[in-house]
Length: 133
Image (cartoon, rainbow, N blue to C red; front, top):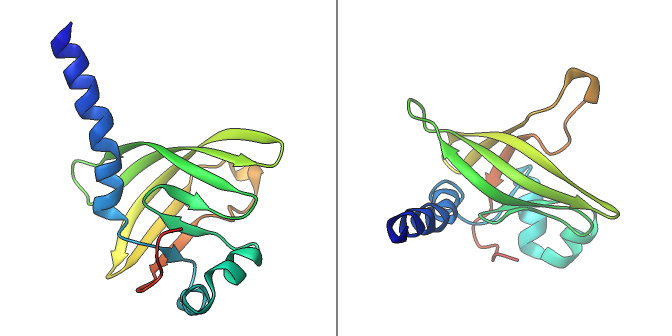
């Protein structure tokens, strides 16, 4: 029993480390947004845009907390389960994450074709000098 508890604790403790290994800082959807976030982070967030951090996707009235990371065995990517919340409701979300270039991460949102375009999917760019919110 004690060994099972230790294994479970090690798995839980390892989850944030996986995110921190892949996500190193604050990311936005474009280099221009990085410049805006660096100039005035609060004003940038108040425009309704979101940032990607090791904890998840964060905005004023939206957030997705990363709950579980499963690293791929034959690629540098991962599958990420998140608990997302908007005013009035919460829902689970599944993302595929792949490094695409230096300081670039691609997030693909698992959606049905009937759901339409995924607004939080796409390439995120590392913003040097922007502190974690």
